[in-house]
Length: 154
Image (tube, one colour):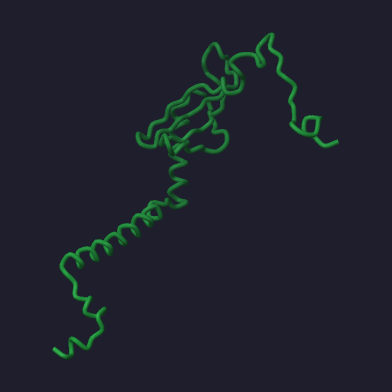
């Protein structure tokens, strides 16, 4: 008994209840869950070879879905992760009779989930739907705050 009484008070407090051990275990487990959650995105990173294979799949599906003769891909693929979609711009002569083989462009949307390509005309992207500015409307001259000449120093 004298031996126990000679220990400082804090060492006697090391005796734990089952609830204390449970709390310590949950804290330990919570630390592992946090660590694994932070490392999870690293495990999903794709290799350069996987991106190249995906790019080839998108190109082939879009060229197959296109109605243009001898269609070719213009520019780089654009990925829209919020929609799980990749976008490509295609160009080539239009085989439809009214178009008479005129050069045309199409926009291809490739859904990553369904692995499906949908193509639509892209000519409206070049020109506005109405004349800008609208007839009878004059745009105000740009003012540049300080400096007088449109914000440019003289």
